[in-house]
Length: 208
Image (cartoon, rainbow, N blue to C red; front, side, top):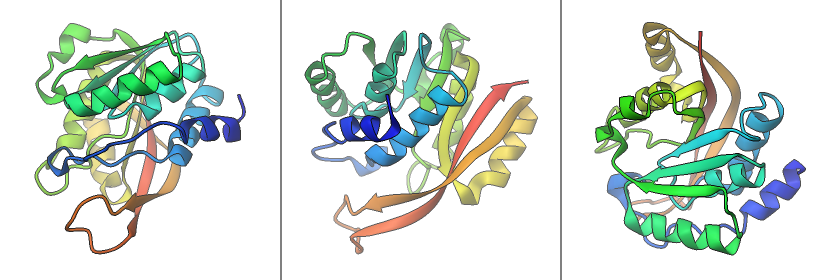
């Protein structure tokens, strides 16, 4: 599947109807999702035939994209029932049999119980602003426990040094695969601008 084709399919994925600010629900754009998945698939061969976890999967754009790229199975982990309901509808519309959903709180999940159960973990975690400070690092820690091979994640470029230090402490290798501009659309009442550009790193973590 070509990158343009993947992006075009992901544009048909429904997103949050009433996003929840406490959960920092912002959709991953079809463009960014397609670029992430295409790179994971073509450069690192970490999707096709693999057991993939999608952390904080929301309405399922990354899971659905991974399924289209022939993941053996992609399991979406998500706390929010409303988002999972939209994910279910999306998966049905795309007639995908290689996706599954799990409702859970990743911050209180016994990650060890899933220790190294997944080949690959993909995620666009909450960046940990406002109410959720450090949430992205909790997601990352759980992802590293649960993956056998690699974790792919988006993080604010401004936090790169902090994340690199954590990766060193945890004994994992961190690579910056790409620097992206994350166009954050106005989703909540307090947003004054139509959209805001945030500098974001697309990172790969692998066990050394």
